[in-house]
Length: 394
Image 1 (cartoon, rainbow, N blue to C red):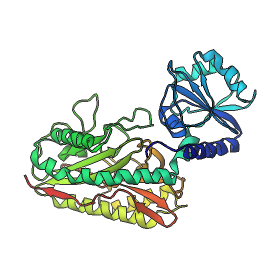
Image 2 (cartoon, rainbow, N blue to C red):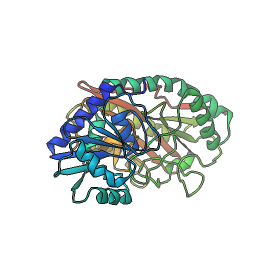
Image 3 (tube, rainbow, N blue to C red):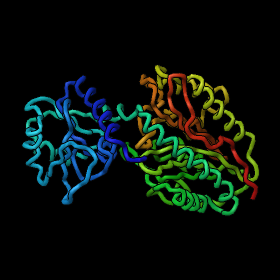
Image 4 (tube, rainbow, N blue to C red):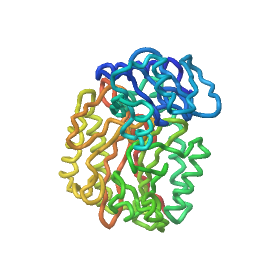
């Protein structure tokens, strides 16, 4: 079920070709693993050449042979200086721009391609690919729904885990063991430069109210300054909120969820923040539909946080990050981004994680996060585990 059918791959390529044609791009070379998987259903040391018209060409750079389900040409590419001849053989025009994933391509690889294809104009197609990927097919949506059903059991185990351990690190470790037993691969992909993440982020008590070293609202402080994210070995104490942010991935796609727990009791300010987070989530469900701008949704959420007198810690400490949510799919940080000032509009078929969160000084992190499908009637919740904040007696 998790290997895309050939018809699915062909439809993705056709959508991308249409976008290239609209910008007068002759063809594109795909190198990044996530994009290779999206268009081919496999990850392999290779380049995928996608012309504006016709079938793609798979350029195998590996010493071994690859078995593939599709009928597109597979050509051995053992030396970069053969690239120009192969592409011309398969119809690359002698002029015109060639697309590259310049948002993620290392400079040294770019320079190597410049030497292999002298005189050609390279343009960025990274955003075009992400725009295609942002709108999920029915096949992709079914896969993500199946993940949500598996997550339902996973989240049901968390209260017992917390009740039996003494530190946030023990919680994180037990979550990993549970996730692996449940079939999660514990690997998730991020696209943004220097944005790295574990599959779970446990932030207990005041560690959740510390300004994040990453472009995320809540990250915890981690075990060292070399990776300042997640559990820090903090003792679980009465009155602490425990924020658990999980990127679950059973094969290729990611679901992003945050659930809240508390040890014995929770201060009134924290309950107020949690109720506000739920209210913002409900407001997004009421407002978000195809054609609505992402910036408009962010501003509405920000206004609600201000009215609740929680603006200082909205979306993280010290003013917070300037977004409320983001697309999810093969990567955690997909399009669209519900960001301040964004003119990008929602489209039917997008899957977005909406995460209204607050950093409360002296208390910790409070919030909620769920994945939603954009339908013609509005948002449909994909993640199915209960939103409740659970108090765990220890």
